[in-house]
Length: 405
Image (cartoon, rainbow, N blue to C red; front, side, top):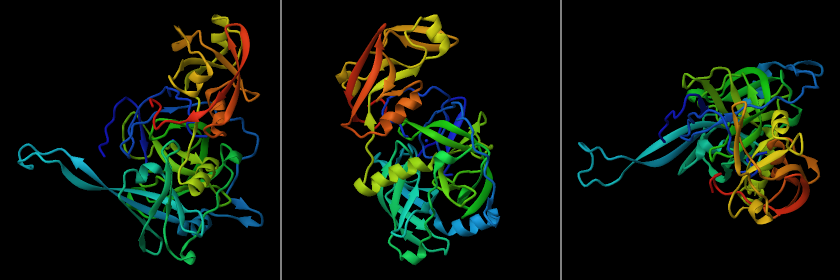
C-alpha cells in the first residue's frame, strides 16, 4: 500500500477511528496519512463533563504498579503479521518486456489481544485489510496462523481466531469505557516498530474525540491519550489502572510535520464500541450499521438568532441521499447556501429536534440513537419544516460501504 500525504495536517494509523451510524455526514477537518494506506480526517469536539476523580495505579490493599499491569496483561498481547499481495507498476526499462502486471508481497505489522479462551483476538481492521495470510505471535515466541472471523471497517475493528490450547491463552478483560475520565492513568502494550510487547504509560488526555474509519465513516466517543503509541501499536490494548482494556489503540496525530512517530496524541477506539462490534461479529460474522442517509449540521445559537430558526438547538438537514431511508420517508434537504463566522451551512431543509423522543442537539447524539438500531428498525423523528412541527417515521436502511455509497 502506498502512503502519501494529501493535505497540510497528518493523522496516521499506527501499525501502531458508536461508529458511523450511517448518517453520511461530511467530517470537516484536516486530511492526513494512514499507515494502512487510507486517508482520514479528524474533528475535535468538546470533552464530556468530568464528575469522577481521576484513577491512579492503585487497587484496594496495595499499590498496583505499571509492572504488575504489564506482567498480568502482556501474555495476552500478540504481534500480528499480515501478508498481502499487491500489483506494482511495470518498470519501463527493466520490467517485463511484455508489460504484464507484476506482483509483490507486502507485510503489515500490528498488535492485538486475546479476549477469550476460545482463541478469539481483537485487532484493527486496517492491520489485516486485504491480507491473504495472517500470523499471530505469542509471548513464548510461537507463531500460528490465524483465521479472520469478521471485520468492520466502520469501526476499524477485526476479530481473528487461532487454534491453540486454552492454557496458551491469556484473555484480557474489557472494561467500561463510559466510566473513563480525563486524567485517568493508562498503559499501552503493543509492538511499536516491531519491538515486541513494549509498554508505555500516560493519561487519558481527552474524551469524546471523533476520528474517521478506513471507509471514511465517523467513529465517535474516541479516547485520546498521551501514552506513546507508534507504528506497530495498532490493535493493541489501552489498559486502565485496574488492568482492564478500555480502548484499542488505532491512530496517532503527527501534527504538521508529517512525521511517523508519536508526538503525544494518540487515539483509541472505546471498549464499549469494541464489545458491541465483537458480539455482532461472533454471532453473525459481520456488522451491519443502520443508515439514515443525510448530511447535516448542528444548529448554533448564533445561527438560530441570525437566521431566525424555529428552535435554538437541533440538527439541520442539508442534503438527503437519493434512495436512502431519509429520502423514502420524505425528509427534505436545504436549498440556500449561507456563511456565518466562516462556517458554511445549507438552510431551508428540515430541522431534526428529537429522535425516538430524545433531544438531538448534535450530530454525534443523532448517530448514537441510530447506532443503537439495526437495518430495518423504525426511527421516529420530530422535526420542524419551516415553522411547522411534524413527526416522521423512518424505516432505517443498511449503511453502504462508503459515505458516497
